[in-house]
Length: 115
Length: 115
Image 1 (cartoon, helix red, strand yellow):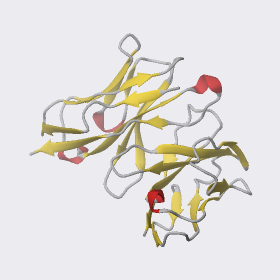
Image 2 (image 1 turned 90 degrees about the horizontal axis):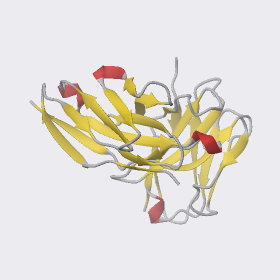
Image 3 (image 1 turned 60 degrees about the vertical axis):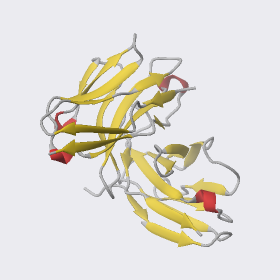
Image 4 (image 1 turned 135 degrees about the vertical axis):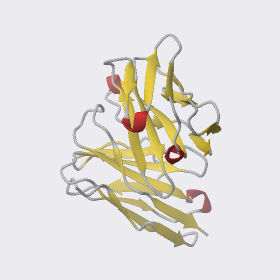
């Protein structure tokens, strides 16, 4: 079956512009997670949802970052007024149920470059 | 707070030799532990996970890891390296007792296989 998909795969933007990154989870998966991975580092948690409810947004670095999942399926991570330090790989993952024993399945990521 | 330390950002082994990738964790409660692999231009793929059942966990592609509470370790091993094992490997920890779904990753170990 289809895995987690993310779009766009690559995004180049100018400093100060807003960007929206999309994640389409595996069909039927309840939980959806966003991570950010800087070059040479492991992924860092940003936020996650169960269904449409945002359960934890403690990893969002500041108020320029927001995420939504209005219908409990597709999610959008929005970065307003982008800065060069926002450049990274943004990864989305989904899992079938609400317990952490379920595996998180990762998408290919969106590489964001802010000039 | 939970954390993971991966010793050795780069490991090189000869084809056919033992693979040993080290991971030590810090957690105030019994954790769940994971190993993920990342091939170039692909998403993270789960190799194996420990969720408080058997301490020796077998995963895909011949990998296994042993949870050692006394050493706070979860090292990844494979008896005989293949060229296809060349990739970046991430150890991750989660703390289910607080209802915390997020994964905390280490900084990764890049494995190179020498022909």
